[in-house]
Image (cartoon, rainbow, N blue to C red; front, side, top):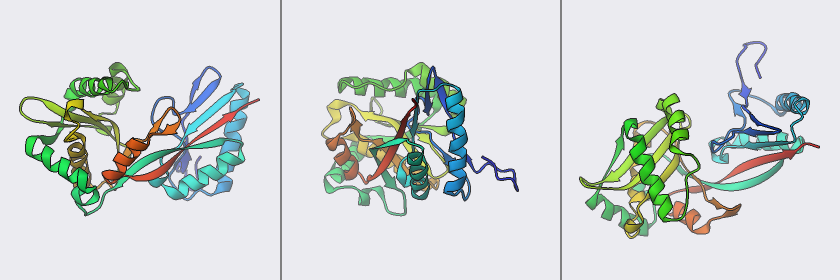
Length: 269
């Protein structure tokens, strides 16, 4: 959508068509509408009226739009929710956790029990940013940590590599390690100039008692402070369509604040 007077894009959305099904996005954590200006409901209704008409011409039978967490842009989320439900999209809410980044230290934001683990990790390891050339090493480490917990990653290394090397400035790698071994690692995405998203992160199970992932997040938080980011998105706490309460509680204990993340579905007759 463009403003006639200035010819500037004020709203846009990207779709991936897979046979008769349409997704925004296909594999990424979220897609949905990007708003760049003061766009009211009437303009968005006009936009979606055109989108729905085009989808019907393509004989689409299903459309799914994954919206970003409400904390990213509360006003935009309310507007998108209002417009999409008017066009018969059914919303379901997931729970994300967002750490606000401000002048407070990470240690002051977390629970006492997590501070103790943080201090233990600080004495044993170092947290640092690593080069993108270490992507395979970081990916394999996180994958092994997930395998220990009978979990898997949503992307293969080949799939992730293609995205990272196409958008190298959008990805950051962090690790917690000593001179001999790695204990925790993260692949982080720069969503915008204000938001970091912890795409993949984990620590080895044998380090559960000191939870080096807390030290890992502290390093990401410090990076965010130094580079002017306002939020760190820790991702959703959902498993098989339900809330993973222990995971949500852990994220709360390290400063994460719950935020709705809507998924909008529409079935076409």
